[in-house]
Length: 239
Image (tube, rainbow, N blue to C red; front, side, top):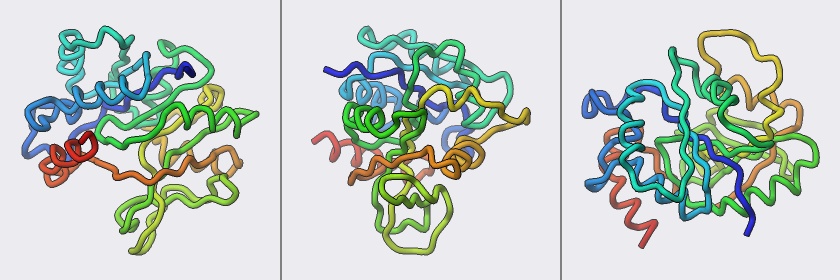
């Protein structure tokens, strides 16, 4: 069985759109069907074959760490880094470069779920990128206008993260696989650095990003409506 590289979980942002219902709880610990969303996420990572998980934390990090200390995750090696100021999604990854080892690593959003074959994505990345590069997981939705679309040609991403008109299209599913060397470039020193707006578009322009397309529903718990529907989504996905 293919050994998977570590996976970084981006969970440092504020739950801005959930503040009214979760004022004192980080989004990754939002209750879903009686369990914290983090519990569901950890179970998914285990089933997908991951053994090393690193959490990129920020706001209310102590609550997440306290949960991880008490959680039954003996089969996972769990580490964490904490932002002392908001760094953005890209800055959070750069902040984790010291504790996270290895040539490659996955990155996932800590507030979403999608079923995908991590081993297949890893093997596709290795085959596609003989030189350092990045792979983005995409899925098709009926209304891509709500999301940043992803377009590709011959497997290489040519357009990433731009809003489009209504109608079906492929979108970024919030799962990535990177060669570490991409993050060892010179990045501007600024308050926040966005993976989606500052980093990936630069790599797309250089022809370094490939697409791993699947057909699976995506759950994002970032709104009260989506959080309320999460138990049904998870039940359907596992049942």
